[in-house]
Length: 94
Image (cartoon, rainbow, N blue to C red):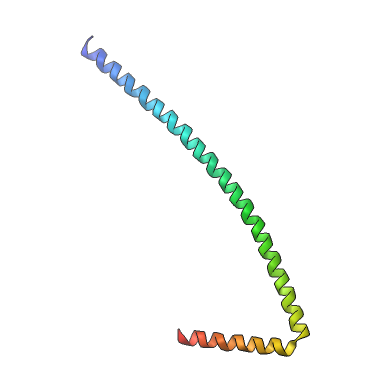
């Protein structure tokens, strides 16, 4: 066997190995992309569900606060003034 044929066989073997490695890499990245897409979809669904729950809780809190202010206006005013006083103390220290 001549040196040229050996070099040709070697380069062909190397080319085949690189091609096979590329195919395996493509297969593994395809699996990783699929898993990432599924995880992203489930995370988006989870986020939407909990965002709706948080929005509902905020609406309920706003309704309860409005009801409390209507029923106890003097206490609500005192609570508001106390909150403003605490906030002013907090901002003075900075």
